[in-house]
Image (cartoon, rainbow, N blue to C red):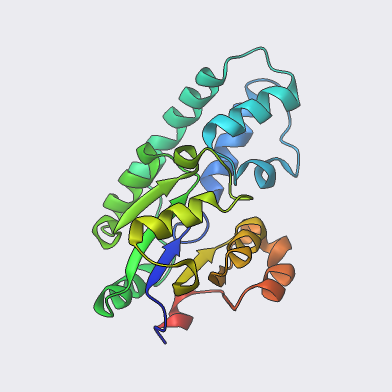
Length: 213
């Protein structure tokens, strides 16, 4: 059951229920600029760092704003939610506890900056289960590149083939498979259109972490 040495988790949509918050933020952000949110917008930006997402947003909607201002606005909208309202998905804490009991090292590989991942993990009392944290900003590449997963494995001191990665989006799943991770796909309603393709790629696909307990 625990035939691996390291577990590397995505954050948003994988271990926390946060994508509805981002949908709300994105809708409100674009509405302020009299723009309706396109159907593919969240899917495009949720693998990017804030900086990449800001650049993409400015270019896509021809905005006359600076990247730093967009990032500041997003951060201000998100920090309160991450600090107070966003909860873990069911049975995540129990699974993290099981990993620790079995001496599995745990890493976080996320597109969310420290200002967001730290309060949400602390508020849900699981911050101390993690041995290391890596963001896409740190490696200057989004999750279509393997850098964030390789860097997290390196920090844990574990070879990629001895790691299991947990992701809720097809891009992340595909990238981890390319670098020989074992991969567990995690259901999230905001990426439900990708489920069938994820199942073809993943070693296991789950709808609830209870399935792993």
